[in-house]
Length: 194
Image (cartoon, rainbow, N blue to C red; front, top):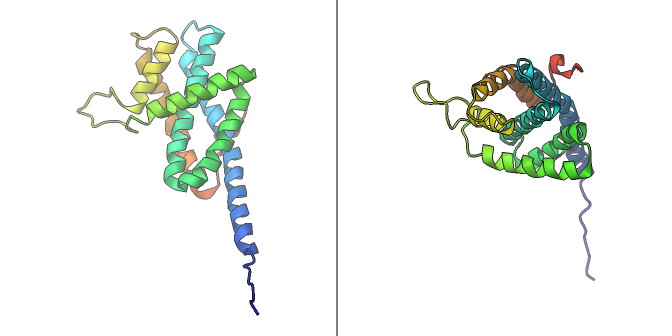
């Protein structure tokens, strides 16, 4: 007589995995308004002194979103690991893109451009180079360069302004991202709506 044994899935393990995924989703839903509001604050700061039309303001907003999402992606990969990061980022990205999307065609374009920015930004160092070195080639510098080019001011001081404005945005934004990923808690300052 052959006895067939089957293993019964460990219900506790499944519950733990579901709890972890639910926790990631909750964190992502908390972080999404933080990313969006931080980008709005950057856009407001960047555009306040210029004569920018609505298209340029939207460009600044969207490029800010790409940049901050890239930083969140880097942090989530380092803190959560690749699998959890994928789950987390899908929720964050969907929440953010829903706020700026006006049509399905625009959604496709936003996502394609976001993927190109992700690939491009991954080539640059996070943080500043040593003080003795030029800032050219850093992540913030390249971000500033893209924004200046997109608003058709490629040779202007706007490169530096974008870099400075985003630096101050990051000064308050980035510690909250790490805190959220590590503890699930967030500062309420960026959650307030404009």
